[in-house]
Length: 248
Length: 248
DNA sequence: CCAAAAGTGTTGCAATTACACCCATGC
DNA sequence: GCATGGGTGTAATTGCAACACTTTTGG
Image (tube, rainbow over the protein chains, first blue to last red):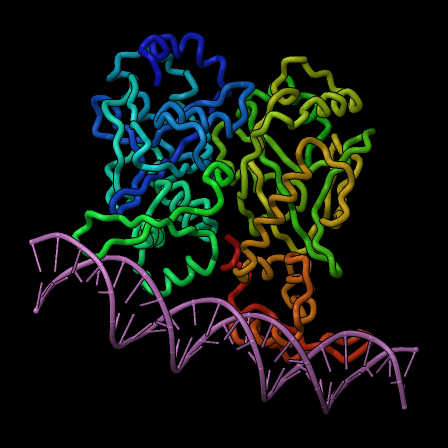
């Protein structure tokens, strides 16, 4: 997490260590209940939310910069991370950043590049909802999971960024990496199905779904069942291929 | 095309008009015979080829920068252009650029950013092979179409860039935009099939292919046939939806 | 014993694949 | 006339979508 010290000295020296006019933004997806959620930061003193992001150090790859953001925001190291688009339009309204810095009380030179045009490389990340401890920083009041179909007002072009991330995620749902990283180690078939439904945005047939999943051979049924539900206990499953080998 | 004047003054003033450490590279696909080809520039005095690319002006969108490259290199304005990946690794070996500038006789300060780390946004473009007049510039000996499965040594990470572009193109072959922009206005069914085969990298069944294409309803058969071939004359087709409406 | 969710198998349709014959043309 | 490529139809298979009944559990 960014310290107060870090922020205060940001525009004096840290900014020089980064590639100007470039940033990475992360759409961090988590799955909870029946909802696909994204992690958002609320800007201090403004009724505006934003995706977690960061700048790219001069000797740091884009991927590494995105990993760094993930670690700061979720405390997680090995998660599935994928670059999906570069946002380089001229309508990103960096101006709102100026308001933010003013609220927080940081003095920023008018010609500092973060106040002007920034090209952002979009990454999406898939994490286990329950393992994340959302952390805010000096620029943000809070860090919160928000359902993808009920987003608050977002800064810059971040609504577009989420939309494109979601579209890419849908297109790539075929690979088992996605479920394996969004779900906990052990899960039931209905849970897996609800995840697919949340990503695809439509209902699926229970029987066909189960058949497809089992025939694919990537699931292993565990002896235990999930008890405590109000109805018949569901079997627990896990992915045969270990979680570690699936990440990236 | 870049003029001599442009190049000579580049490191004095033009460089300041661009976003540092950022470029766009274009994989320009054309279709000729049975081969999918890409347009490459040969660096002056070096046995090294590179993708056409350019820097991004401070008030220019990424898309616009890519269009500019296309126009310089092919003379074409409205072509299908699509961003597919941002290349931001640390192993791009910008050092080879230093050799190039030395050969051409341009004096470049050691700390000039084009000699160091550059993040490149990759675009692929689809053009009509026969409408392109490949143009080289002050930095390159020649501009040539090269078959995608027989590429010469490429600068930087451009071999990766081509590979990823090709993979993306394959994944998006469903949309008729691709064929419509890679083929001339009028074409035969075997020509369309050879294009699909070149992109997919495998043979297709002639009869099933034709059936699918005709049933999709996007083709219009013209009264003429392609004469002059050694064998039975093939019908000519064109896409029903006008070419203009398909671009982007 | 009833409501609500979980487990399982069958059937039909639609899309894809495999495959064979005739036609036109140049040599 | 024959070799080569172009045009067309049909049968088989496969994958996917629709669908119904039984089991378990808590209340």
